[in-house]
Length: 136
Image (tube, rainbow, N blue to C red):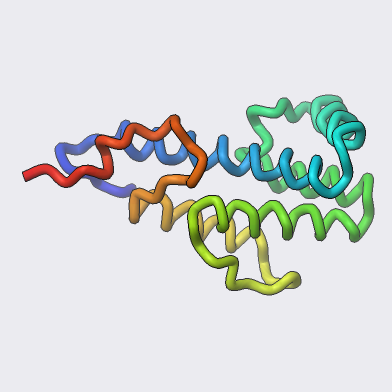
């Protein structure tokens, strides 16, 4: 477990929660941009019918991928790839991986980098900026 100054594990928790929220937002945005709002609504309903509410999309992303693959076939890989690439871009990192690379590993690597480097997503107001200010 990452140790932060003064043993502040709430920073880590905040970063993980923000990461998961950002990943969920990237997924929904990717589906909407690629397939439209009507299909996005259907994908949300499909996930909820399978026990995955919107707030759990990131934490249960492996299951989301399985459900999408079952529903869309191998073309679900495009949605997953675009979601992960969008997530990297949200953290101002170049998605330097290929379409057939292990996307699960790429998400895990990014999550660890976010925690260790205290990375903040571009469009997030939920991360307390005070964690980015060095104290003496």
